Length: 121
Image (tube, rainbow, N blue to C red; front, side, top):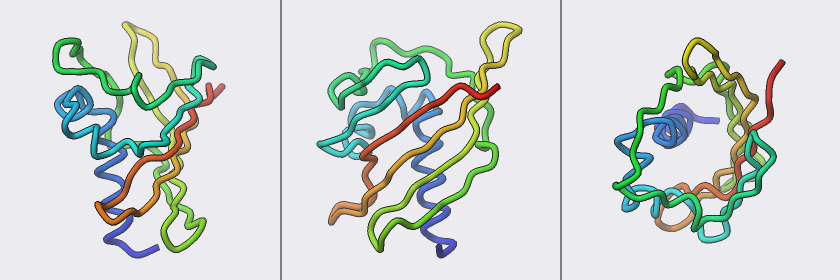
């Protein structure tokens, strides 16, 4: 995987963990593919329309950045799997999860098709 793709996907993935981009529906509309779905860390399944949160419902995202163990795996020329460990602080507790995202290169750029979070022991 070339360094430009690595850097671009890292910025995009981390945008999901930054309040200033995560709660900007104009930005997220470009990030989430039309067929996006997520298997959340909680076990809940989310569709694309549930991911557009709007500016009104913002809150602090207490995720550790940069994302830990960030790596890419090419599945094809235009499809890449991103994997990393998330660490989110809730009070004195740190919630850790294994994360996997599938990004597809479209004519408009990289779009997020699928994401899964799994609790890490």
